[in-house]
Length: 108
Length: 108
Length: 108
Image (cartoon, rainbow over all chains, first blue to last red; front, side, top):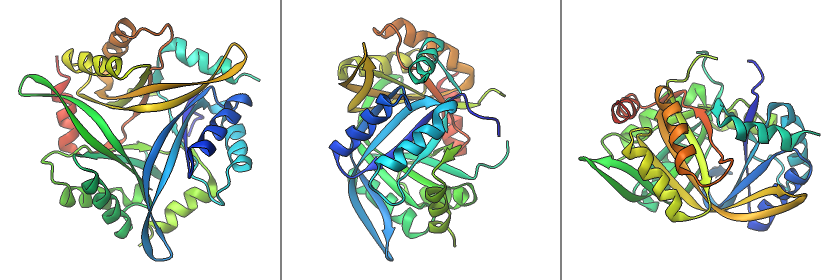
């Protein structure tokens, strides 16, 4: 697959203040242009054979394909889960000025 | 289009307990590795010529392309809307360990 | 890239009533079939060298690739930000009846 020019990247964590710290750190490092925190959401998953639910906070980052590796590396360092959710979706269209802003904000 | 390896799949329903039942059922059936429920959200749509609003809950499933048909079939059986929202977006990048976990959790 | 048949389009604004007005206007104009408003969410971004946070509301539109330009043009007219977030993601699979409904609702 060709590299996506722009991406949204989603992670989840178990406290609002941890979500905000992840968002701030990524923007500070210019690994993302911005992020939006939603929550609490109810996560549903299997754990040791049972279906569990837990309150979590979602962090949706906006970045470029060029900065994805930096963002993933940051999240692996900063996140306190062993296997954090890190999933990226391609932005296929958008406002040209907004996409330019994404690129400027994440430029080293 | 080539088949996506991993997907997020979104549905909405009109009560929190229905959303949780859909999430639990999909994870139980290994049609999804996990799901996150957000809400209430405000849905806006046209109904018989008027614009209506309604409170709904979003369920965001994480699964593989290989398990999509199973997840859609489950949602059609379990959802009580005639035409439920079922829309899938490709996960184009992600944490390798997380994506491997998605595959393991949804393996038959 | 080939044109996507169906899209989700995300914007954010700073008040719940503005979010609902954007959603209603887009559905009224058949630039989107429906929209879901989530919030408040916490937006994190850089502003004049500092990392700021603000409460915002997300509006997630469902539309067709054929109607994307109309939706973007509407959002540019109706949104009161200079550079509003407008980002689109492709719907790669979905319920056939739901996708047909998207097309019917957005047909001129």
